[in-house]
Each structure stands twice: as structure tokens, then as C-alpha cells.
Image (cartoon, rainbow, N blue to C red; front, top):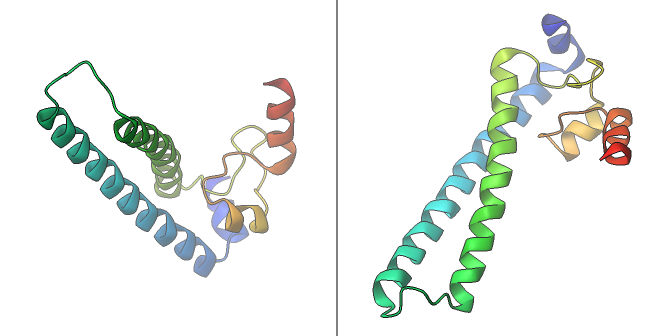
Length: 120
């Protein structure tokens, strides 16, 4: 099944999506590091360690979203290395090309995604 995936996704598309995920991983890591530095700076500058201002709340929320997205991106890159990228994790059928182009971190085909959402 793993080798079949390469036949489903044309090498050019496969490489483009891998590159896109790698760039996104890099960007997300930079955003997380920037948020960490700003939070640390704010914590050191703040005389009341228990207080959290609005800027810190925004930084924490943004950092949390970036971490969640980074997990998806890293998972996608791992699937590329393992040769399972583009294959639904539930039904093991190919994920549609348009879906992967729109959402390279997709883990499920559209049918299984809909089932997951209904069940969840």
C-alpha cells in the first residue's frame, strides 16, 4: 500500500506539499520561539508574577494554536518519510488531490473526516 501512494500522488505534487509543510514547520517554530521570548521578557519586566496582562493572554493563545498546528505539520512530515502521506488513516484509501492541496495535513479522506465529525 505504501508504494501505491507514490503512484497516486505525482512526484511534483508530493515534493511541493513536502516543501510546503517544511516551510510551515519552520515558520511555526519561529512564531513559538518569538512568543516564548516575549513571554519571558514580560515575566521578567513584570513586578507582579501572578498577573497576566492582555498581551500575555494573546501570546499564550497564539503559541497554543501554533503548537497544535505544528503537531499536525510534524505528523504530516512523518507520514511523508514513512510513505503513508496521502492515504487515509482510517480506510487506507487515497486522500483526494484537491483535499491535500487545500489541507496538506489532512489525515482522513473526506468521507472518513465527515464520519469522524459526526461521531465526535
